[in-house]
Length: 595
Image (cartoon, rainbow, N blue to C red; front, side, top):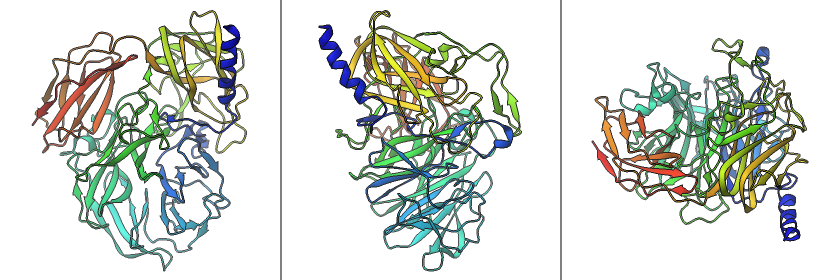
């Protein structure tokens, strides 16, 4: 029997050694790419990775992802394996809030950080021989978006402001993409009517919100002008949409807004994104998700299934959006429902680490005045931070070598399907694109805490994976999971979350009861509550403007109540809630209609 087990494990280690192309059926947010270390604020001495404002296009069957300040861009043919391209010609200071579009056999980009820019183009994005059009558009441009209509006409949309409306203008491709006429104001924010447009964490600030990050999608003859609000550093960063039968409007506010919204869970926010069709004709929405530890604009990229209802309502499904989801190449019954069904097994479980950073060592971060500051001396970096489902907290070991390890006790035997190791930059000293970075480690499993079997061997991994997601070839029964460090890029090993996905062998949580929704006098807000379910890890609250279209959701850990502050004042809503645990998901509660 022992020989048989060893024989079965050997190919598993080989397949998941981090040396070959991943052949996964699933992915897990944040998107697992080699995020660039920012060089924008080197004067502070604070080193951090970031990826934001993704502009993703499908060009000749491959997906090109342009990301703010990355000194290049990524390409993929499956949305799982992303290869970074260092282009032959590019912006010296990195692109900022890039615009990208396909025009015939060429790709267009506009992304000059100065705000004064020409459109650049190439027919070989895989090489990046970008050519300037020389004509600098006579507009101060922020957060541009380019759109090429079916008739070949080209349009520019742009804005990032808490004062100005979003503007649009047609460009002339036969005249260096110069504007045809004057820019037109298209849409503005109305936070007094649209709760989700309010500024601040959980929409709790009275400061004027930011309107930014446009993107245009045309579907069945309707133009969907997407826009981001209220601020990129907040958990409620989201995308909404206006529709029109013309690329420059007039536009009508969609009553089901927001369309891309993820205020809860491990990784929050889902704004300033782009919507792209895959090679099967299905839509996907890439979006910006904040971490905001080293700097308020420390961010990552999220990917969510998206699409359009029969009546034209746009949706982006963020439910369980930071759990494993099936990739475009995996057949599913319904594109919008790509959750693999693998639950989080590691939440709040017992952790044991053989090292923690010495007391008093502080993290250097960028403060509100853009000067470096130190975090409080009593900030905790113990191993419990690995399982709290908060990307802004992390375990920090006292160094970075192959003696460091940490283990998680799942409490009982469970079936493990996938793992995700989320590394964090703690007092790093790297800036820009750095060659040769890699994350090397070994992950082992055990049923008794004494006899360990190899589960993943990344000891010779050559990839830079700050959010290493690993789908096992075959599920493995385990109670204990152990991470053993080999080498990571920075002085200190720091992990924000060691996430384990699969299924427990227990019963599903019960259906929530005593479900209540009380809309406040301020119609933008609603108090939602339900009876606590014993054994439930958390809950997912759904809402929408029609019974069959509860397209917005929020994940809530531990609590059995929630203040929803994202409603539109003149709109009625339907609500449901479900409970989840390691064992799966309950039936949804009764549906409530609230005026």
